[in-house]
Length: 254
Ligand SMILES: [Zn+2]
Image 1 (cartoon, rainbow, N blue to C red):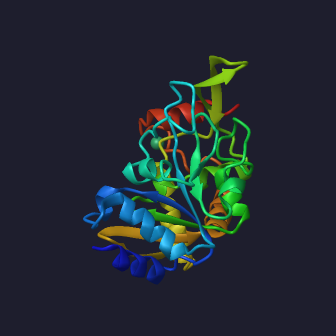
Image 2 (cartoon, rainbow, N blue to C red):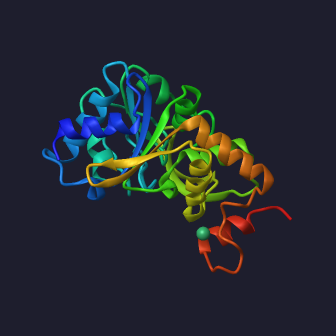
Image 3 (tube, protein in one colour):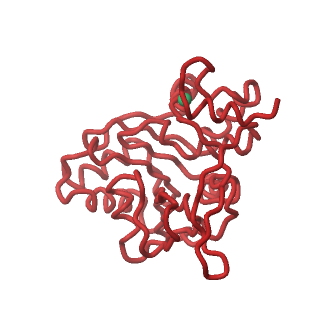
């Protein structure tokens, strides 16, 4: 697959020129691509055009003080890891939940944010939502879709789990607990069915990967509707021995 073919696939899928696009990707699923992950990044930018803004998660393990110009990503994949290192790409400052962006809205999307929640309305994903962006899942499913944590924040779900994260306070590193709506995220996959039933998800191939594309506002609206009916819907049922979801469940006040 070459870059030109990737651009054609991205456009056929419905990537909007001039828009804001948040991409979660597994390059292993997309390859082979002539030129590797950098050619995929170039194809995404070309599909968006000069007026479009490309956004990727660049989250880190929180084990050392975060430096947006140096700290490597943790479990975000090679594409995101190479993306934030490209010239002109802006990276946000959250010590665990940073994002990188390139394009005219990049600085606005990566502006400072509160520590908690990492993915609330005042965060990069919240700003992509406010700007009417799209979410593209390349070779990954909605279990990797951070925008669903925004939906949890907007629906005010009752679970919060705290994770230790090193932050710099008055020039000295200090470990703080950052509360987030964390769990195993496997049940985020339910969103596939909701979006498909409503005709709100485009699906196709990009490279060899299964690709899903949806409007951020559709994802959030549909998820918030379901969470209002059942705020614990995204947690594995008690008794399924999912440690992460059990911890989230245990955090709910009786
Ligand atoms: Zn679970």
